Image (cartoon, rainbow, N blue to C red):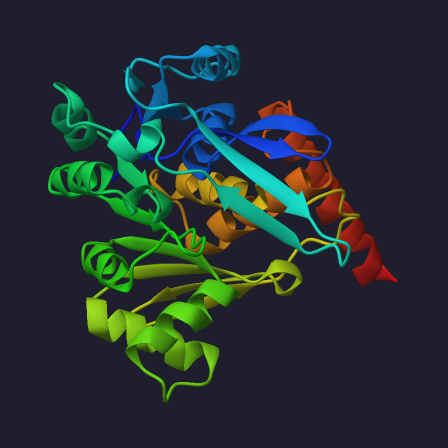
Length: 308
């Protein structure tokens, strides 16, 4: 995973979130790619949009963020993805992910296997597996990837237990949140109760070498087959949590693919995840320096508390 120039390929959905306050570009793969780019890692998106106005605007947005659209396919038959986000009277958020859409039909086009085989990491999620076409393309590309990073993103009813199990069996690095851990581990073993027991179920059943678990305000944990490392969350005033998990993964990968130590890697990931929650939206404008300054200020405040 070490090398001079680092490349990460992100596969899956790009879309428009139709919020009560207006629409915003979305999709976990795009968010991860955006933050990797911000951190100096060459990131490449594999996705698909419709041959329509929504698709044109989405491609324009991605280009404006400095990301390549060379592998964002154009579909003549299916529309660009939209997600209707409804906030109820009880403040519960419901997502209506329209189907079928363009990213359900990501094709195994020429150049994709070579692109993936030459990358340091290949990031994929669960949402883009709901349709056979994109799922089969993903399986083909996984055969070429040297480091397969499964970023779980469960959105009912758009997932299948068998498909999730197959993807887990091919995973080198699994990233999921605590709620996803409880749900997925429960599919395969109803007797486990603690976090570590649930992690062990996935490790033993699927042979996953590394697992990153995010736990919101409780921080994050990193598991290998033989060790565990816990890291606390940064204390910040939260604006919104949209995209914080995606930014966490991007920062984690930006260090991990360079072979850096796990404690420093978790610190960097936790910092970016927290930093993004102080802004609005999943892809706010910032520079790498802004993150480093945020970390420095946090370290300084921690030192002051220790002195007191």
